[in-house]
Image (cartoon, rainbow, N blue to C red; front, side, top):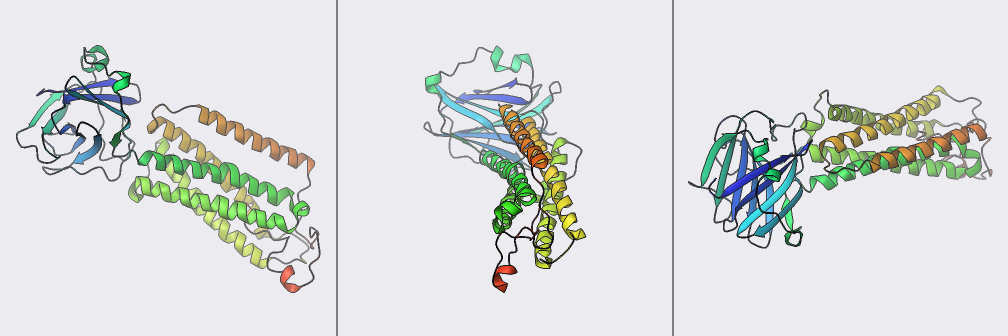
Length: 379
């Protein structure tokens, strides 16, 4: 079609696009239209090249003007490559087949239904195409349209290059960073904080409290705040707070619940520390509430790490390795074994009458600000 060929391979949960065009053109655009045959409500892939570098941008058009790059992407264009071969520019990239729930800028591609498609190109910088445009309708996911069955040129390995950028590529590292901070918060810092507070007061003395504050306050709470902020930045607040019945919806709702509860736990722990009485003869109800809430929110946080990992593997990550599931599972089993061992061998420390004080303080300032008996932030 006007020297532009588009092929699509159905790879299960992803679609592999291959666009071929005369390399003399400075840009080419290929779009999928929601209803009409023009640019209105069209998801568009734009390739710009100058012979040495190529840029792939993911755009959405709502009318007859320059389509903006999708500013709230729920999808990442991955594994983008390009090559110049026999006067043809060849670009390939992956896109998930079905968009996540709540997406308005990424369209569904039906395997059997005919859909409207548009093409445009230009010999100058990306802009108005003038008469250089074509619209048509086609069933995109057919054997005839799969490049694996077409006599198209094969890109030699030596001719592949990695200097192609794709709008949305920056989203993937942010999603990974979100996951990493949440794994650190709930699979590392939270269990360590609970173990220190429950089993090591008499062993560590005042340092149990300092370690507990560092692990739970700066570790768990800090990483959760950072991870939650990354989630809002990547998806946008409107999408993040959207409720649906999908796995992604479950992850968002549970994540918001955990975020609220961990802030409540931080407030409760700080308040309990201020109310601590070294001479008390029993454990007050608010201490027990703090312990119970901490365990509940820790379990919810770990559960949401799992939902997030499944959601990412099914929706965004092309070539996601199941090794991450095995690694996280093995780590959590190890944490559980340590917890069971300590529960069987160690006696949880009590918080009464200063009986866990290792060394008696001699001044008021040493007795009151950070008592070894304090229960602050006891997750």
